[in-house]
Amino acid sequence: MTYKHKLLGVVALSLLPLALSAQSASEAFRLGSTTDPTGSARYTALSGAMGAVGSDASSLVRNPAGISLYRGDNRLSLTLGVAQNNTRNSWYGNSTRMEGKWRVPFEEFSYQRGTSRDTRGRLSFVFSIRNGGSFDRSFRAQATPGAGMVHSSLADYAAARTNNARYDYQAQHDADFTLSKLQSTSAFDNPRVPFISILGAGSGWISPDKDPRNPSKELQRYGSTYGSSNAPSYLAHPERLDLEIYERGNILNYDLALGIEATDALHFGIVGTLSSLDYDLTSYYTEAFNNSGRLFLRNQVSVSGFGAGLGLGALYEVAEGLRLGASLYTPTFYSMKSDFISYGEGIYGGKKGNVRTPSSAASSYVLRGPWRFGLSGAYVLGRSGILSVDYEYTTLGNLRITNPPEDRSYDSPADAGYEEDNAQLKGWYRGTHTLRAGAEVMLDPRFALRAGYRFTSSPVKDGMVKDGIAQQEAFVSGPVVHYSLPGAINSFSAGLGYRISPSVSLDVAYVYTHQDVKTFAFPYVNDYGNHFGLTPQQIKDQNVRPVNIDGAESINETRMRHKIAATVSFRF
Image 1 (cartoon, rainbow, N blue to C red):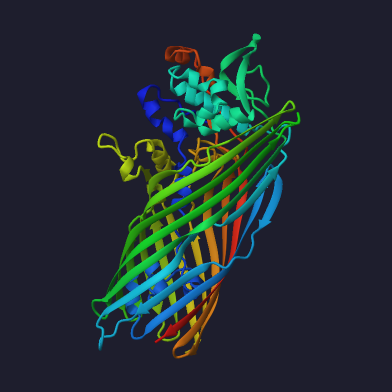
Image 2: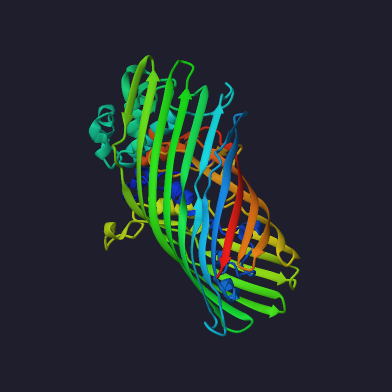
């Protein structure tokens, strides 16, 4: 385990708001990495490998140049789906499974005007509204860790965060961290105190340590109420753990695209996208101890945002039937508004405490999404079928949080207060590689069979988790302490299309998506409470190291999604 030694003085103080903010690296990644535009049933059946296939309005999310391949009539298309999200979890050997409800998500509506050299020339046009990504998730994991398993409690984490905030100020604001101050209603107005510290103190999870040589004397550092009271590195060991997470919301994209048929072989395209984001989270976390103690934390989060981005593409037919394309999509810049409310409760020694955060903790920030770079190829087998392959690189390590323009000052950077969050986004996450392959076979001029496959690499850098234990502290959003590290995505799809008449067609598709994820109930943290009263030289001479609070083991989460999509198209 590597220790993250603290910076003292002005540098540490300038970074402290990270511990208090309602947005963080974990929230930014959750919201910024969900960009996964859906499309028509044909697009779904080909697993999105449409960059060089074109013609379909949905192809603009892979390469906007492809829309210029649609010639002639106007076309209206509507795509709806039914989807179910399931999770299977394993935590300390305990397995749980949750089957989500079948939902009817909106997928896409589009109007398309094709090229016509006789009347409209070489320009094509698309307006579409589409689902740009879904946040839906129902999750529950329960565990009964064995006596020999080393794990800590959320109370240990809350105590460590309190000690670290106090240590950062080097006794300049010790009065802010007394138990009475942390339990007062004014504590939430103090920018130096983390919300998790106030919840811990008000609920009775944490209390000042006792001096082992003089039990009537309280020390400066805090510890868990549920652990032993005479050791500097004690941990509370809950006997039962229970974590529930319910997420809802999506991204809705409004696309306006223009395709240009420069020559018979060369095509260009541009698309502007406005995005509306809505996200809601409710989570419950419970720990039970063998002394009849209990700890409970509930969080409710609501985030909304609006942003814009741009996409460019080119497509070239290098030989008859063989097309190659390239595309670039700028980041979406979101203006975000976030609000949360949390409730903490604790029972220990027959006493019960509880505390609730203020009814509104609204804040605003700007989130920059990832760049996307794409390459595509397709081979059209006359009227018999199509083979297509798409590759995309997404710069998820390039996500960035900044202050809204109205909160910036001329003498500080745009990301003042978020420097470490942005450093973590860059240090923890890397760009993802996505490979999509699709095939379409025309059984006759009216009937088509399709299949596809998609693989997306994990965005998490190597070495973040070892033997189920996080190796670095995650920056979480205020009291919302749980977070996830996603793995690779695999999906398989199939579908068919049928032209009912010259002007009406019907397409259906099915896709199964699988992803393994590491989910943590709360972060790993180094506790600097044992540094109180020591000078930097004494710390160096005595080789004093912070206490390692590993947290609970990761939950091995498997996400499985089933979706059926149907598209009706009308030419006129």
